[in-house]
Image 1 (cartoon, rainbow, N blue to C red):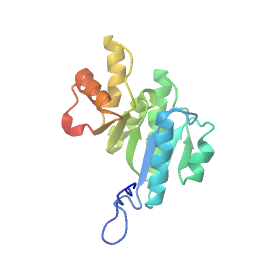
Image 2: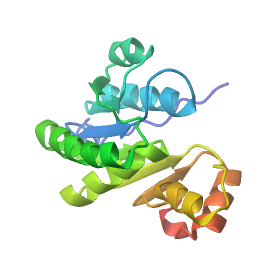
Image 3: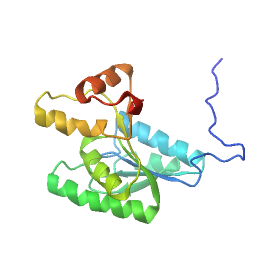
Length: 177
């Protein structure tokens, strides 16, 4: 018999997330693990009375996100162009201020750089999910990948990925989940 997942409610019946706005960033909402979990998290947030914003360039899964209670925020966040990434920092800061964002969650490297800068500017908690192993052994590539290990909390999708994060980025085990 399958066990029911735990409910995350306080004794007064509200979730600790009730009323909060969580912003997730993914390059686009087309297909893949990062996109699927962003939608699932947005649905979970809606279920407990929180707002789940997903910043992306859009894609075929936007309708599903909205149907599950998430809010799509279209921005050109997929770019790897450093100047456009810098512009995205300002765009994210504006969205966070306008929407009362409580936490930023990055799920992909290119948008994570803009998200990290916005979180630091605003003093917001910054969470990353490391969805798998990233190629590259050169110093510039390791540095580029390191943004995913810079979260206040770093979520690994497996024990294997957690070991890679520890070895490649010397991430404090207290921040790794």
